[in-house]
Image (cartoon, rainbow, N blue to C red; front, side, top):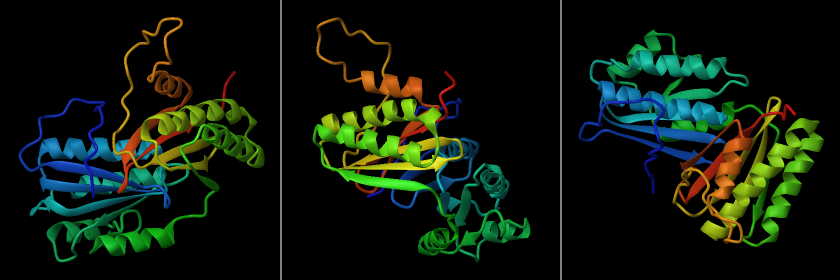
Length: 270
């Protein structure tokens, strides 16, 4: 079942009109994020769409699939927005493939093709076609993955996987912050989700992308300042504050079965 992502927006936007929705889901195994648009193309939906896709780019997935079947845009006014998103992904290092899903016999698909979107923003008639095309276009990437049971030793095993990846990929300056971040993410998953966990470590240039997938749909929220006193039980929010401090960026995205919490870790400058 698809769930809507409602992150704290970084910019102000008009209140959504009736029927407007931007749903974001992640495919952890494939490294692909899907964004589904619903409603009439209005200024508020345009801003919501741009914020959602921008947040996807921050995660730096291998690809973004934009499903426009539910978009009401008879005049194809949204075409420049999708074109810009496609070009933005193409200019990233490494590039993020962006594809659009929209029936070909529509003004929007025709306008995108007239803009020359075939190279940087391919248009596919169905979501299945888009998914198949993305799977064949994705570049080879350095990635290791481990499935863990929700046991206390999961944290140690996830940290060992991350440290081994840093060694194999010759990234010693990422080892310390990456080990800290993956430990906190897995610890939170073990204590709060209590389901099987999939840890994915991927190389992103000089940094690492860490993803922890579980079957609990509740998304984490960064809490306020710490208020824990000495001798009190561990504050559940401690882990997220540590991740927030150590990672260049982090977030959470729904999946079909739960969620994935991810973090992008850059080299330690110390």
